[in-house]
Amino acid sequence: MSMSGPLSLFDISGRAMSAQLVRLNTTASNLANAGSVSGSEAGAYRTMKPVFRTVMDGQGRATVEIDRIATAGANPTRKHDPSHPLADKNGDVWEASVDSPAELVEMLETARQYQNNVQVLQTAKGLISETLRMGQ
Image (cartoon, rainbow, N blue to C red):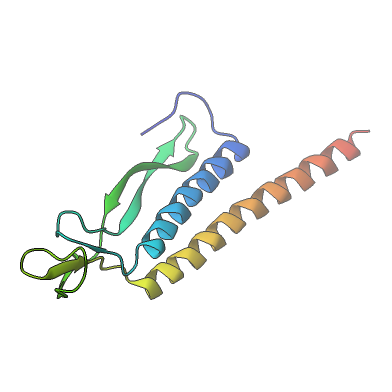
């Protein structure tokens, strides 16, 4: 996909930071739903992952945006628990198959990527300030 206008450093980093926030939100949802159960397989929580898409401008610069949020990972697990209030007629519940350790790693990687883009913006701000001081 390409954009009509040129991407600035601030566009590139800002869009990347927005994408990482979506990634962090989906990771938080996954962790919040770890161990949740449902009375049916269709109603059980499924892990979500953002799908990123590269966005190019006409001058060869690229950034990222979210294409969609997709379900990923293992299917819910059926567990026999007839005493559970959500159990179906067979006494089964369906537990979300969220890999909590993998989600924690995802959260740390997301925070690292976000911080990298913050550093890019801080460096750019410093360079712009220094350039303005030199012109005085």
